[in-house]
Image (cartoon, rainbow, N blue to C red; front, side, top):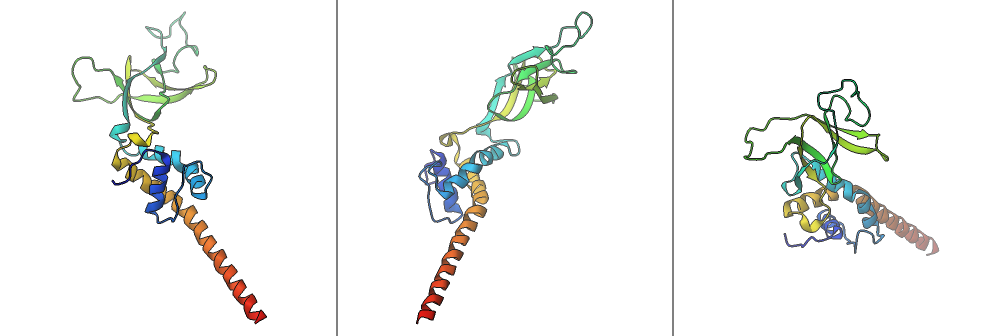
Amino acid sequence: MASVIVSPADVVNLSLQRIGYKGRIGNIFDGSEAAKDALDIYSQTRDDLLREGEGWPFASRSVAATLLKSAPVGGYFPPNTWTSAYPAQPWRFEYSYPTDCLELRACKPAVFFVPNFMPQPYTFAISNDNGFTPSRRVILSNVQDAMLIYTGQVTDPALWPPDFVEAFAAALGQRLAGSLMKSLDMVKLEAADTAAETAEANRKQG
């Protein structure tokens, strides 16, 4: 790809070029019509694309889960009865939801010695724990010492591979085309009406 993409403005300008819009932005906050429209949908479009399908390899993350709560060993028997200090039942462990996680793909045991070439699925749930102030988004699982596999939010365009840049520019362009081209058509229509009114006024004066 000929263009060097290092900023959101570069991506927006690539999108504008793809849809045939005759204009560019200086930056995504410059206040122009194209910049304002792009700013409204830029982050959502990027994150939607990152979540698609199995995710993009460059955005894949594999991290050790941060444990927040665990059920008592042996279960809930007096004097150990369930309270909000424990994970929601019937789950044994509650983990922190990563701040950059867009799509959690798996919550599984860590591999200590050799790769597991026949992985087994492990169920998990995403919930909100109101026991924290403010409430926290959490992952509930029965897997101890879990590893999280997820698609992370990558906001720096300089870290995107060319195929993602092209896909994002196309997706953003599709969403921008409707509003920008409609505005452009309105400008042309207003100009045509003004020209017609001027011509009619000149004809009457003549």
